Image (cartoon, rainbow, N blue to C red):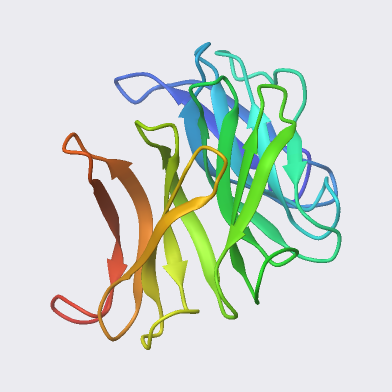
Length: 216
């Protein structure tokens, strides 16, 4: 790559052989890629973080490629001047734009908040919202729901008495909250991925120290 740590994208055959590899990033900073999903044209939407580009410190970083792994148009960054933003999940939406989620210390209510950005097809922000309380909150997964809204999952230390809970947030298309829930036991709990199920509910995967055989 360009230097230090860069986003690393690999296209792999069904037998495990590598077709091509690509890296994305700047010469003086660090980039991470935390999520990849396909676009409607067969390219890739990569979501992560960067401190080579953007407003300052780390910003949420989006790279969109074609089916050969080459950048289409530009890369995009989202965040504030004085804080830190990290991107953990990104998807193409039914209107052709993108929905991104992660965390922010530049905006919101507390130390770290869930950060969700809805953009148009050109990466221009249509809506951006934060969710959380006075302590630590992070968004790890997001999916568009059948009603055009979004279901978000992550972790929160702002609500409840445990060290952290699975944090589930349902919004409408403009990111207005329909409901939010905290789920888990008396110790550490975290949500990493969420999907809507065929019965209209949701399925969440993550980690817990509250239940099971002990340890992690």
